[in-house]
Length: 226
Image 1 (cartoon, rainbow, N blue to C red):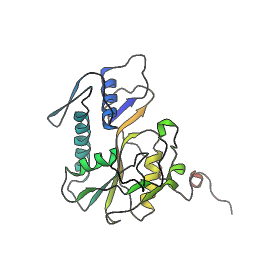
Image 2 (spheres, rainbow, N blue to C red):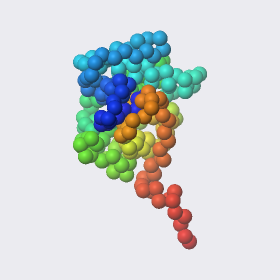
Image 3 (cartoon, rainbow, N blue to C red):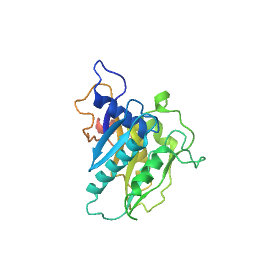
Image 4 (cartoon, one colour):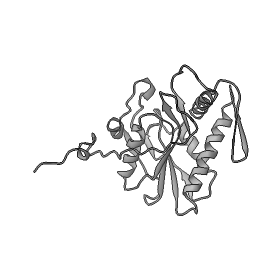
């Protein structure tokens, strides 16, 4: 939904601060700055220092609209699977941020759309922002996937922030290993190190599928010599 700068540039614009505030709010942090108001679908969402809820509701509404358009008309069952945060382990059944976001989106639909925490880490992970692993080949073996709905159901991943894409690749591969599939992934924020003309433009990116049998992708580059 937003492409936000991870560091200040020489000339920060109001929309740069706004996109950063939304990303912070969706991650569960105080959006800071000054009060903002954005309109989506005829509704105004307000958020600012100490008041993140408007930004979270804005992103939920945006994600709901996008899924609705992709499912028009709704067909079959869709499972929204949150990418687990660093403390979402198999030994810890506590709630976590992206699971909360996934449920909020699913609640906007009927019974054919559900949210389930089918992915968890085998053990607590160091945060990527604090030097933890970011690459799919490092993350994949540390994940476990327990399907809670039929493998035939369509699935999408939900995450708050996209940086390298490694977490999405590893999670999608772990789901595929169960015999199910991932149709797409939705994230709130895309980290940027350079200023983009419109931080609210919705970029669509494609990442190569991670293959645990070819973790470095050599098979896509070299042909085997017999």
